[in-house]
Amino acid sequence: KDSASGLYYVEDRRLELYDTTNSTTITKSRMLGNRCPRVPRTFLNEDTCIPRADCGAAVFAGAFRLTAENMRKFYELDNKYVYRLTNLPLVSTSNPCKTNNNRFVRKDAGNDSSGCSSDSNDEFPTIVTALTSFIGDMNQSEQDVVRVLDINGISMNCNDASNDSLGASFTVTIPSSGAIACFTHSYKYESSVFVMNDWVVNHPGNPSYYKDSQTNPIAVVAEHENISGNVEESVSLNYPPWSFHKFNFHQQVWRFDDYLVGNYGDVINFNDLPPAAKSPNVITDLGGTIVADSGEVVEVC
Image 1 (cartoon, rainbow, N blue to C red):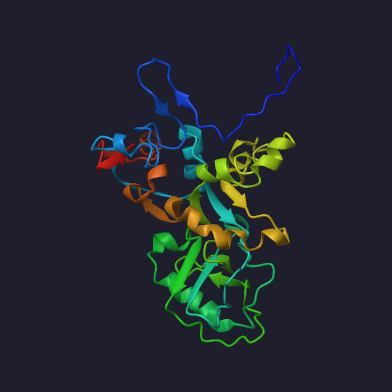
Image 2: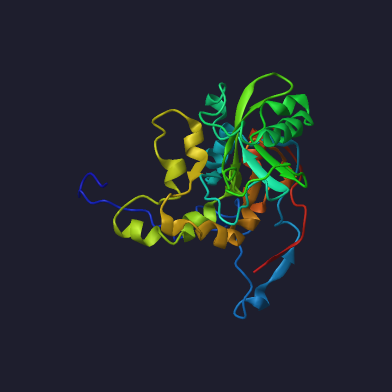
């Protein structure tokens, strides 16, 4: 709000901003980590496209864990909206008794020390056994901090004609520590972490929010004042519960393939980050080191 005129101004995120402070160099500020602004090749610009060895992502050494605090640094240091997706509907997901490929997520790790508020342990004890065994095969240092279990190629050894195990929760005892945890059968991308800058700009609901002078529905997750003090709120994009949204992510997930960072709670090598997340400022702050300024030759148009 302008204090003199009383007018309100709303940022239009459809615009990509360039820094031309010194009038000699141009840097695309949001999407490319301040490296070599470029646009897709078309018949109009193909004659200008050249390979450059100085425009690829840097090569890094080291790794970090996808915790809320570490994910938050991408926004604070580089304006990258790095979110975990939560509450995704179980679209095209079979119950765990019908498939050998399942994802289970520890959704409330800070508050599940007494187990699930309502679990299906008695109805499906073999699933509990499978979860416990899978966790037990991990390094002891990982067992208490793991948040996402992708159990592939393993039968749950159960029958469930009524789909009661679909989306069910299970109380599990962590083998290494004896701690109690609650894991919930989930959609295959539940608690996956993505760089969402492209979606901040291109989310189809943006025009209606903009028209009504409302905040950007994707950016607001990172930008709103975190009243509760829980940093997880600022890195968690909760999928809307509206029925007409049910199939949207499942049908559009291909849009996010290039922006997948990993699973919440996992340890990620810096070099395995998607290009959109390879920010030297963030990586060095997280303890990584730069081995080479550019690791590949890329086409710049």
